[in-house]
Length: 178
Image 1 (cartoon, rainbow, N blue to C red):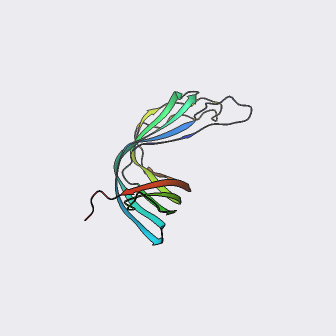
Image 2: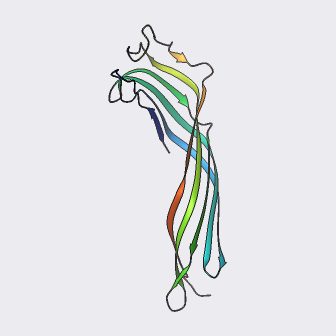
Image 3: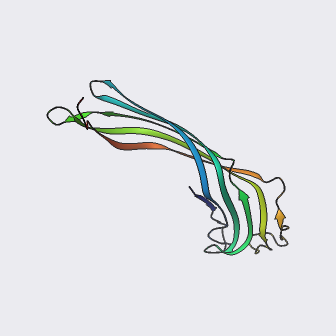
């Protein structure tokens, strides 16, 4: 998996880059455990539930700062390890089974549900590989380069959360009659 996060700059009255700072997580290896269940509650009323936990076991992240539009004028870049994150998601949906065919061997189940998804991405053990003086404005005059090499104490995280309703359709059929 991969994930990009960027900050657009907006300083009233000052020309600034359209992307000021960006972090890009790449090649994330996520081991996930999912528990899924569906039950028919009463005469066709159908419920579907999912619960998932994940651990990010590998990946990299690049954090860059830009001085000009279009991700140009890069003046700072840190490469770091991204393997200390995790994921969590759960979903619950309800529907009604519509039986099709002469012997009710096939069903369609329209569903309406709600989903909650959380992802915590990490950035640790970084190395500063590009460092120069940022442009001014929007940065204060005299702000200058960090030293190249290991970034001592780097331990940052980004927590992303998605929630919302969803629509779905399950299809079931009996392949063999026992």
